[in-house]
Length: 259
Ligand code: 9MG
Image (cartoon, rainbow, N blue to C red; front, side, top):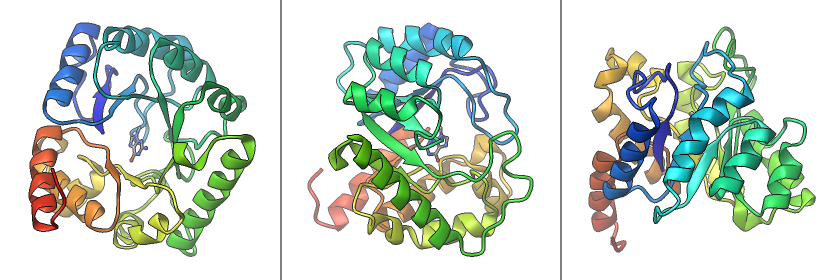
């Protein structure tokens, strides 16, 4: 899954792709590099980022989704707002990547009605404050219970299991130790019976471990993606698609999978 941030304050692209044309060109490049899914987002979710209005978010993402109508891969809309989901799905997106796991009022109904796929992510707190004091008694058990409950809730509401992906939410209300535990124990989430998505690309946990700035976390991001895939992740959400695909080609060759 290639990341297309259409945000002026994106933590990872410094706003380089804030204009529609540049975002579309970037998305096309990610597909040429081997992305199987594009994740288009108009609101930064990095720790401390401000909430933007649904209208501002739509003004950013809709022209990009519309400009990618002919693209050969599914488009995911990265949003927790039902209004943005509705318009993005109508414009051509076929998946919702929701850091709020469809808990916002109206979100679940929206996705049920649309027939779209969904990624349900765990987070503790809200992006504005979530890194202030993350606390768990048992991070694996608590994240796992949350994801299991959300799978049950969305299935009961009418979303087929085949349309559901889960994500432990690296960096979303987690300390470095929590993030490492989640990565180490990723197989626990795979055991919940739906594909697991891992988003580690350029995250601050990699900065904490390497001492490197966000612009210099390529090697750490590729290794983190490999560790996630080794532990069963079916989808890795990344900025650096070309390098990640290279890594996966080696991984698949060694493991005897076709590529
Ligand atoms: C939007 N976004 C930022 N980080 C993410 C992650 O780790 N997972 C998912 N699903 N979305 C993310």
